[in-house]
Each structure stands twice: as C-alpha cells, then as structure tokens.
Image (cartoon, rainbow, N blue to C red; front, top):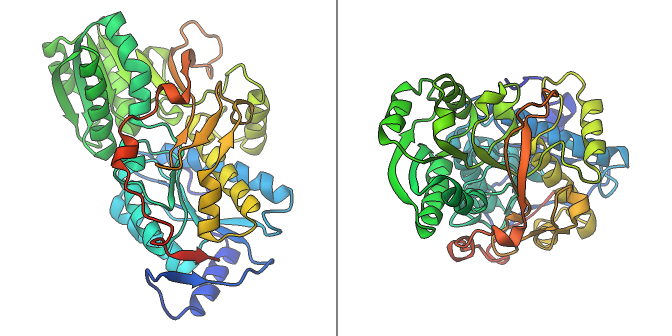
Length: 431
C-alpha cells in the first residue's frame, strides 16, 4: 500500500501557497494567466497529482519516489536556475473528479510551477483539461491509454509511458504466429482498458486473428471466478488482458490457482512492477510489456539501482521498476528543460520539451528516445518479458524476451487523432 508519509506537505510549502494566494485577486483562464516576476529565492513548486489510495495506490507511491530521487539530485547540485525544487502532493484517489479539484487547487491556491504525476488515464485526462485551461505544463508520467497522446492530447501535456498501442504492436504478431488466431479480450471497464483493447483488437484482426469474445472487468474486481469460467467456456488460444492495478494482481493469483496460465497463451498489454512485485513466479504466466527493467545489462542501470536503494532503504520494493523509472525520467527531463529554457515560462518550457532527444545510454534503454512534437508522447524502447523461471534472486522476476525500437512500435493513429491547441491559444503561465 502507498505510505502516507510520502510527500507530506511541509509547513514551508503551505505558507508559500497561502502567501501567494493572498496576493492574487483574480483567477481564470485568461490569455495571460497570472504571470509573476522571477524571484531567485522562491522555490520551483511541483504539484504532484498521483494516487495514494484506490486501485493504483502502489504505483502512485512508486511514481512519487521516482520524482523524489530526480528532485534530490537537482537540489544537491544547487537546484534549477538557482532555485530549490519543492513539492506539494494531494491524493487524486484514482478519481477524475478528485483529479480536477486537486489540479484547480494547486494552480489557483498553491500557484505551482508545474503539475506532474498520473497512473489512471481517466484521472490524467481530467487533470490535463484543467492544466490547459490555465496554461500549466503537465507531465503525465505513468498512464498509458492511447487517447492520452491521441484525441485527449493538449499543448501543455506530455506523456512519458508507452501506450497500449505500442505494447500491442510489440506483442500481437508474434503471438498469432506462436499460439494461434482465436483470441479473447479481457478489458478493464474504464478509459485505459477500453482504448488498449481497441488497439489490440485492430492489430490482431489486421494480422489475421479472430476475436471470439470480449469480457469487461469492472474496476475493483476481486473475485474473478465467473469471468474465468467464461474464459474456459470460450476456449481461446490467446487471452489478451488489459487489466491493471490491484485488479490485475487478483486476476493473476486466481488464474494461477486454477492453472489456467498453462493451457492458454496470455498476453498482458503492460505489466507495472508495483502490481506484481512479491507475487509467486507462477502468477507471472504469459508475455507482457514494460518500458524498463532493473536488471537490464546496460550502462548506468546498476548505478541507478544503487541510488534508489540508498535513498529508499526501508521501501518494501527493494529494486526500482518501470513506474519509478518513468517518474524519475519525466521529472529529470522537465527540470532539464527549465534549465535550458532559462525560465519557468510555460511556452518556453513546452518548446524545450517538444525537442527532447535522449541517447540510449542516458535513458538506460536499448534505443535512443525522443519526444514526438505532434503528440507529446515520449517515443522509447518497448520490452516484452515473461516470468524468470528458476531464478534464485526473488527480485529478478522478469526475463526480457525482446526489445523494439520506437519507430517499430509507433502508434499509427495518434497523430491523426491529436488536435493540439496552438501556442497562441494556450494561456501564458509563469511563477
């Protein structure tokens, strides 16, 4: 479970927010929205919009730890533009309505410089609408619905995770060849699940598969017995699951108990490390996607793990996973973009973020990464993995099967679906 002590709001942060709010008399989505003079002694304040409760509480905690390590590294070097970086966090509760309220509060009361954090795509979409209204740069660190960089894209929003289409392209064609063309979809009944399964369906059918059924899984499902009975009765060769968070953990445990992970090929679109860490290896049946793994044989990886362990010695998760990695990388690139821009002005920072190119070595991945300026999604290596059977290291749970270059798994529909606001139609914002 997420720890409540993660990112407590300090008295200094509350005083900063109260003082700034007292001096502001108007709010609103104006063309030039609350532009303040730079003060070298005023911290750069990040409003963290991640879950601490609900289905994605564990991932939210991991997301925040990644941000914390990146922030600590900048502050140890003197901060950004001579200013320390501070944070304020309110639980978004895996709820779009709560995400909207939190984003509004951070902008109009705390006067944050930037917003960062997400696991649920529905929550991320809600936050980004508020951010665009005010012109506040928002980094969606860990939600992966294709719509986040497609139809729900915004000029102020940048998406850092791989999306459902990227992972499906890495997995689908090989699965049809290896396992068969009779497919069943298991779909979490919310925006990420629906859009991820839609992308999988399109790719599978284009490659010759037949979708014999799609079963919706309500959020918060803990008893999968009736759902798994439907799976057995349908008799698919492949089950493609877009089920996340605590729902996925419950599903994996019950599939393993019924030994359904052996006779059917399972593809889980993306496997977030916090959802499976500590589970028995027989729960990690099938093939699944990820953006990063702590035991990749690449430069910088083991040093990164050592820094994590030094900063979080009491964390139950003894090694970092993909969610931590995404939170860290997004925060690092945001603060680096502010340094390059020489200002916290939103338009200047947006233009820096749109032009990000990161070498494979700096990303600790197999391929160079880059930001797509037309969708604002980070294009990066996509890995396929399975359970690391026979390992003697309980933390070494994944066996990496393949890595795909960004261009090979690019979302074919994102750019057509994304109708991004112009710079001129985005309010100016600076703290």
